Length: 212
Image 1 (cartoon, helix red, strand yellow):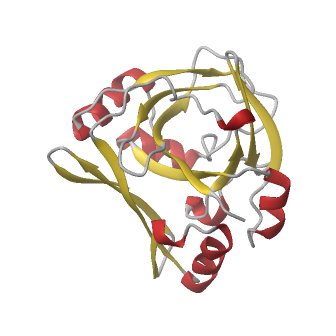
Image 2: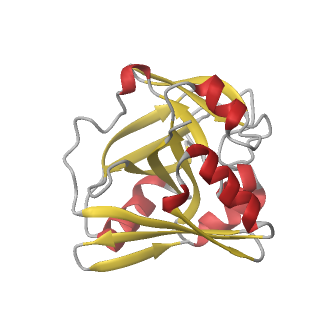
């Protein structure tokens, strides 16, 4: 299975105010984005240069009705809420695949249930655990399949910002490495042994910024 890097997910407590903090850190603006009715969340996006993909800033949407299921990316978790109240944090990352059923079969880990999500006119399929959790605390990617391969940043300008690498630690780094090899994404992830942690090294016009 050949997967590709799709995007990184930065969680925040208040979308407008905290997105401004991320923009200031990276020296580049976000654009696009909108609301996800199924999850009662909303987001802003930044198209990345380098190897491509994009950055997503996401938060609980206080104006939306409570969802009928757990929100994705642990956004209903009180521990996550407390972390995001302090500052923007790395939550997880997402890999795109051409065949989501096949990818979930061969990836080597439980990526979650395949669901369909909408935002405005956009539709896509994504793996999300029923409890809103994350595979290996977000170190292993959620898997996504875009209809016709078109993602939401196709119309946004490319910014002078790029993902350098995904930096992680995990009690079983060999397991993480094996799963990344299954997806063909081992080059993106640097993993060491230890308690679970996740960070993104992001290259900007003024140097590398780490968001953890």
